[in-house]
Image (tube, one colour):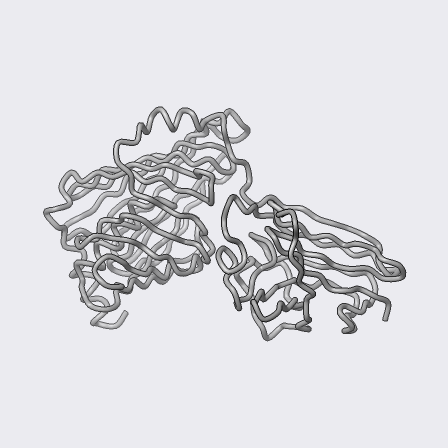
Length: 377
């Protein structure tokens, strides 16, 4: 780490007296659905909180972070209780112990645990999807000052810490570039108290609002039997077109009242054509896709939506996470036929429709359908 960056991180660790017994509550939404609620207490040397999360099943999570001399994180513990009544262990525990430049992370795995040793740079934090730790991050950025604050953040279960960069936007806003999550936009006060957060357009996609006087116990209890299930469940479609057996494996996010294209899916950027892992097309024989010869094989499908016209990208890499797009492996970029839908489609849907001696591959979500023709070579 460069000397200036290390100095900024260490300077930002110094605990502020305003942190004594500070409390807060957050409501986390995915479109019109409430995904989670959280509340916390932050003292000079300790952060304690709880969260009720509704996906894929409802869990009650308790987290504790201990800070050593100068405010450096010394230990993070997360205890998760399955309160949905669904399958899975009743309780799991994850711990991160920071000792010098090494962090020892113990995670549940089946009926046992696994421990990994990672390096976390000075000033780094441990994160488990809790927004009080995001607030800790922006407070440190506020105290450090300047036009850029860089540090690292270890997400429990990740193989390595994420690079994080925080930049102020005036007196009441900040951007947070959070590793593979992408760019978040935060509303803050002058001390760095987190007032709101938007992840729309990033991998996270949620909005977070600071609230007051939330009856946490009552709302959390009401969520126990009301799990949301997987937010973007996996699905597949298979059909025979032009003598070829075609199969597509993908995940299906829902609109949930959000603006999809130009919002959740930004214009003019590569989109994974679904959610979670990259969408995969497999064909048993060669095909013409939008007039382009495509040999038999497996391809990941990516889309570039744009007001000026959409592109479908066939990429030779498969099996990767849906944010891991590498244009060096593009096989072809094809024009999509785009049309509006009279009736909105709530859940993203891919269809393969035989037509005559050929067929069509269709993508439909919200008020838009995009398609490419399929034919024999």
